[in-house]
Length: 238
Image 1 (cartoon, rainbow, N blue to C red):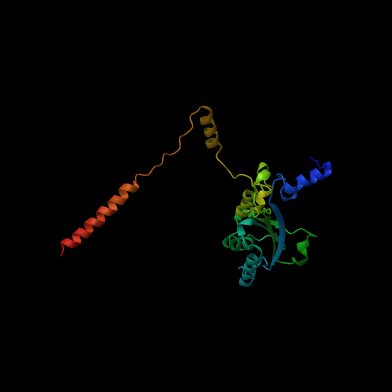
Image 2: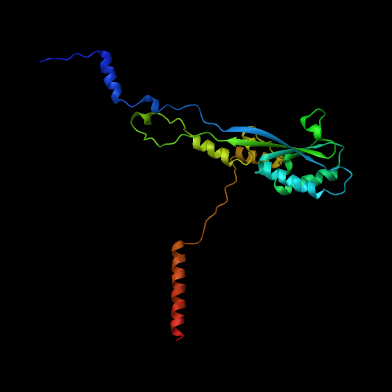
């Protein structure tokens, strides 16, 4: 009997030819994250403080600007920079147009125009509007077009949790909240302290018990009996 001797390197090469390619899969990578980009747009509103009414041409121009740069009005913040003195009526007229369009009132601030600022070049009279918008770029999730099996199932895929993160980025009303959350509004401290006191004394209020009194089976029987009664009455009339 003859024995064929193979070198160790040749034996390893033969085994590697039957094994799956390692380059086709990777263990879990760093968590996927949404990217948030900030954009700034400027719009000059020619509205002298001595005017009694908001010029219709300027109002229409403002609406066109908003339609172009604020497709989602709930995700923008606006700064109104006054160029030639403070006018409450002028600011209220502009705020009214912005709120009617859909911009949140608490996301509109009024500031005096800063000297040397980029927007001051055309700020001779009226109000300069600075629109700040945040855009979410969801992560690129890998597809599952390739079969997953064998040793690949021992590792979490590289896009683990990617769909959840991408859905969050597409659902958030204001992408700015992904960078920094907004502060809480005013609250009643007495009510909140009472809730903490009940929790400590194990006297938490029970949830409201809700139930339905409609039985689907009885509903079907009622409908069938009413339909049979109406059909019987119809036959008796002949």
